[in-house]
Image (tube, rainbow over all chains, first blue to last red; front, side, top):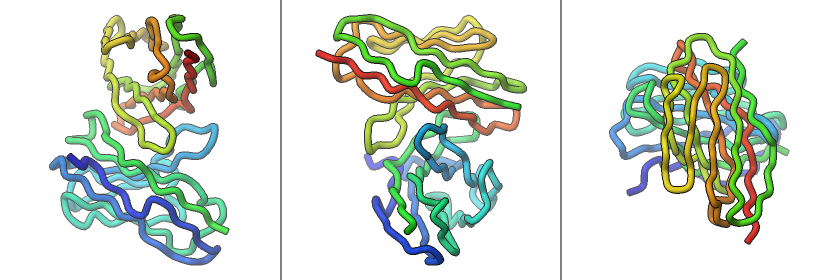
Length: 112
Length: 109
C-alpha cells in the first residue's frame, strides 16, 4: 500500500544545476499537488493538477515547472536551481480538489 | 487576505495532561478545515475535515471542533506517541489550501 511515492528522498545541487523531482500515486486520484515546506512557515503550493491534462500555478510558482505525465505521475522541475529553493518538497494527491490530500514523505533538497 | 494562524508554536505536556491547540483563520468562502499530523522526516498525515461551524470529529484521544473564526484540536490524556507537529489548513472558495505553520506538541512520559 504505497500511496504517494517521491524520488529522490535527498538531493544536493549546485547553483544553476537542473533536476526533476518525481511523484507517483497508486490511489487512482485525479488531483495532484506540489508544495514546499520551509522552517516556521506553512506549506506553500507551487503547482497543482486538478485532473490529468491540466496544470495550474499555485502561490509560489516562479523558478519551477511541472508535468502531469499521466494520471499517476506528476513531476516538478527546477531549471536553474537557486539557494532560495533549498527546502523540503512534498507531493500530494486527492480524489478531487475538495477532498483530503494524501502526502508523500518528501524530498529534502539543498542548493549550494 | 486569506490567513491561518496556529497557536501555540510549541507545547510541552506531561503524559496524561489534557490541552488544546488553536487554529484561527480568515478566509473568503470556507469550504472546509483540515487537521493533519506530521512526524519528523515524514509527510503530513490526514486526521479530520470539518465543514461547518458547530461540527465536531473525534479519533482516539483527539477531538476537533469548528467555529466561524477558529478550530480547536483537543487532546485528552495524551501519550508520548501523540508527540508530533499538528497542522491546520483551510480550503477557500478556489479550493486551494492555506496552511498554518503548525504546533509542535511534545508529550513527556
